[in-house]
Length: 414
Image 1 (cartoon, helix red, strand yellow):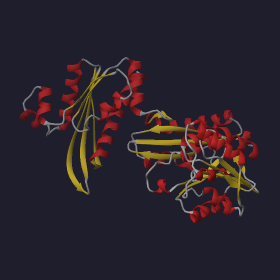
Image 2 (cartoon, helix red, strand yellow):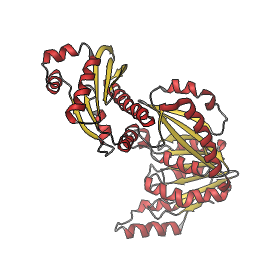
Image 3 (tube, one colour):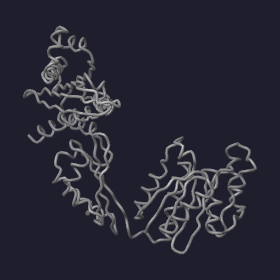
Image 4 (cartoon, one colour):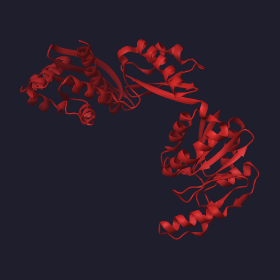
């Protein structure tokens, strides 16, 4: 059972608003066992809307359009659907009564052009909309249906839940199949390197299917299973998850909406560990991420971006600090040790970054050094990172938090 989503509105193409409807509808379809094969966005142009809908009908069983069913001249979805199916638009008195009643309840006077919203294509099934003034409608064809609903997210979500999904389940007898997914989250390797380790699991046609999605410092590995019941789908996902975890090991830090910094702070609380952080290059990004979790395990975060601030914290002269900067790993170690001792925390962490060269086009190569002061001594690592400075700082902050995570894994196992 294939489905497509068509988002209609020039404001989407102009970037004036963000299309959140597509992702919301996609989730609802997946939960009902409907495979989404394509999405499209089209502006307020009658010919183009007709073209996109016509192409979708030729491919798929379910077409869901959002937007373009308001009262203004540029709301053209109902006209487009009517012309695609070569049917006239017919006035629906009961829809008009509902629209008028909603205006009255809200204390507004209805404009004449709102009457347009009470028209739907001949033979269409009306979708009553108690949340707004734009009723939706369904036009069926031999093996499928075009379903047009409002673009206002709150109205769209309500109608998907109360009208569209129940209709699809009845029409296509969907109760027997489900689609479930789970996302594993990993860091420490890039998408291509992780892809090589699970390449055979990502082959087309597998059930469950496996795919990856990369963002800065974070790789999402999506496992999607189709089955006749939620229990069967869960079983398929669990088997695949075990295989992936066996291959990637500690690279995986969480699942679904979990975050690296959130899981690190939870583990610190479980182990009754406190942390102090010194940042010289990342400008507080590490502390900001950790503070955002609401955990009290982060005792202190400090930003020391200058020679003077670093020398003041270490209680040495600026000349001594400049000398230490020639050995940046030692400087990171000294800052981490001082943080642990000064703030009396279980762990002291410091990150030092030094721009090595300007690579042009606003990009730089930055040498980054990390020190973690523990009860058993100092743990160290260093990375050479490249890119725009905001990107390098973000990557460096993720490397820093992941370094703490790996230390917690080690002592947790111990």
